[in-house]
Length: 498
Ligand code: UN1
Image (cartoon, rainbow, N blue to C red; front, side, top):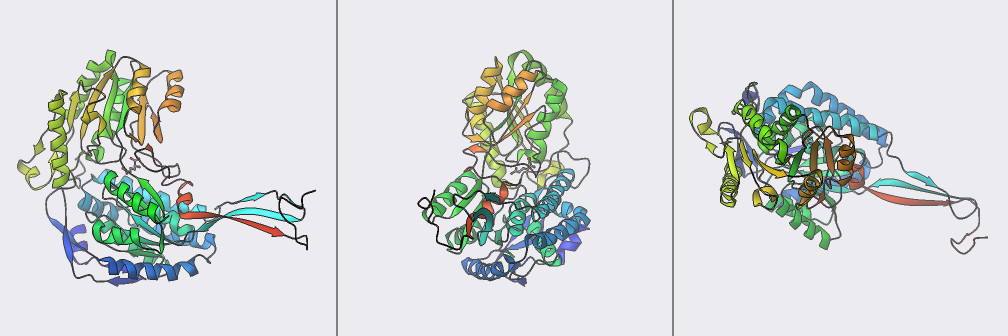
């Protein structure tokens, strides 16, 4: 169904409410079967300039629309997304490869964000504050920053786009958005939904293309005052330094090396379920994916045995098939990176218990598939325990105590998500205090953040900002302090105080 629906369409940039053709394009490949799904336009810096110009003009008007009315548009966006949930999910599976159940989950995350951020249109709270002087009123309020640039990744092409664009819109900004070249369909579909929901022209502009052309032009554009980026560490760091030079606000959400801790008192069956879901779901291609299991030595063998039994049952293939549990890897570069880490793990002396190979026979031959992989007896220092692999590879690191588990968890460059399986209430509270990540789970895997809580990490994962939650508004608003003196005379602060 989706294939025919899409074939009839040509992806175009969405600028100032118009659908604009771009000459150059490249194919978007379905990673499950190697077929071209659609062509994605490759825009240049001129397209970015046109989009920013339109956004700048539209933003002036949009900022004057009362926030509850801006929110009305988001309520409509959420409703349309809900009606189209199945279509969006299928298209998402086709461009990204994630299994249909997870695609539905991701679209749901976007729907939730629409209704949640629409609600913010009636809150958007500032503060009233006592003034130092008589007959003087003081308050602080959130103001839009103007034109914001959002750069979104291929692994969550719709959810992350909603985390960034919805708070930006409801707080009165206009958006220039560069979606990942691998997954442009979700952006195209969302732009159509914005249009249908009655978002004024120019408030959201979508410019398709490669980061080197479109992303750089956005980062360097004087009129874009905020860049919100989710993606790789190298790109994020380079964006941050460019933004730093320009005193441009930047919000970064990058890598993770997330661990599940399994203590000796854990419910092992539950831990196995949690590990499988967060390590092999989305084929490990989540920033929140579990790629380390820090296991108490007393339960290591039992955990290994149960993991192996359950891993056997994982079905790997085209995610449009409801029976498939693990989909493909996004592209060949992704596969090569995983292969490289398998070799590194072997060379470092970790023991491989399962997987470790590219699946390229039979039905798998046309796509990019990697067998779910389990290493054991890894040490905390090995590269496979330290570096982000972004694939279905998990390494068991045995430890002797709770304290050592916390130390190993915290001993990495990143700080996005962590989890502990334990039945001991004291350990639960110690762990939630001492695990140094931005997200902590107890008796659940490392994935599955909910949109009304702050999403983001510490250390190398980001730069202190948060996507989603009310905290997302901090990225897209500036605080303004307002003083109203109604004394009828000039009152000098700090001087005319009795
Ligand atoms: C990501 O991988 O960048 O918490 C986002 C989760 C999802 C979002 C992941 N809700 O796993």
